[in-house]
Image (tube, rainbow, N blue to C red; front, side, top):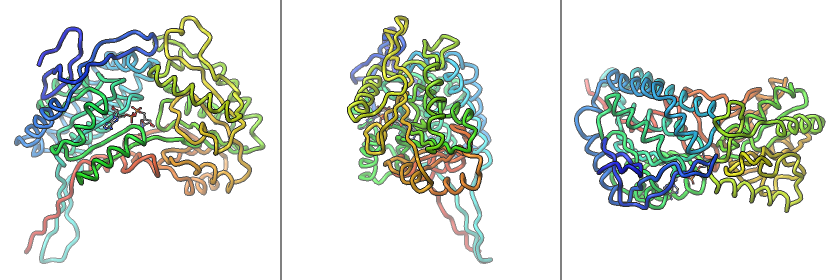
Length: 483
Ligand code: NAD
């Protein structure tokens, strides 16, 4: 139960643990250098952690704590995150290569999430439902118990805060299993929470792979709910285990979001939003607008605008102040992107921009890839159908609204979408027909913690954020009191 100098231990009941799993390396994708070795939790560590979380949540205290007291601790965690903003931004930058400005935004978003759920926890209580005069019916909300929160590597701080804060606000204990690509941000947040007064055992972190650590966690009978963000196939595998155990699984999965531009839109503004929508985070965003649909009469102009933007976007080291796009989060992810771009070439696609690693010796050791635009393909091409999770935008023309809706809805995914037009009636008409959990009109990637977020179709089940984001982690109990 010690913290080895050379290996980062995970966190169970407030203690750093070296664990019995297979240790792994955290690698800086901008340089290829090893950041540190990280301990991994094996099945017995998982069992010990679940027991510690069960004990913590069963102790009188957390689940019965007055909401304003629980809210005070959540606010103190938010303060702690703000106080450690530079450290947290640096962790994210060295583990997944995001440029510094994006890392700072992620930290601010994590703090805002804890603050928001402090408020929700304090103000959202039981309900008395209308009933006849001879009885009173009340609905109270109880925590589910121990929640497993399994997260991806693209935006660890934001994704983890989005699960930890509402699950704690709801009175649960949480075990985070972060991605092995970004293992330590969750540990840092859990230590901030301990310092903020959260009793040990209520927020634990188990590092390791999905197979060695994630699977035993989801299978453990003490885990009463899984909250997962990640790839669709992983989500399906987790949902199958959860279904067998009859426990809820909230799933935030992949996307292939359509970004739609009509000829009557402000094309310059639209182009700027399309650029950020796909190239922010090197395209490794679940809501990346990765399919650009342009009304045919504006196609040439929009392609020219996008080519200009893609070829001038500054790709560089995450710490360089002028860098707008860093590397992919891992060398493996760059290989995935390269395979997709090759498949586009094989299927007859036109590489309008990028399609290669940067020709820059200063970036040669990192997992960099140029912002890439692909044209000349339709919805049957792999690169148009499947999630790439990289800086690759497919550009497709449409002729009329029927054609647009058929193409835009023509994937298995349904996470987000964007519409640019000066005709608001048309925008709302299309918004109603798009199969996606979020539709942005004349904006993109605007996200509010108070607004429900989640996917249609293969993009997920359930909605995070908002008041419902706390209710996800509770069960309703209805009590009837006779007169
Ligand atoms: P992933 O599915 O490979 O892994 C996600 C997490 O699940 C990791 O912690 C991993 O170790 C764990 N895991 C893997 N196999 C497991 C198993 N069988 N049982 C339990 N845990 C397992 O995803 P990723 O590559 O880390 O992230 C990229 C994916 O996440 C993309 O598809 C992206 O769209 C999606 N994503 C979705 C959202 C959203 O809100 N909808 C947000 C961010 C990312």
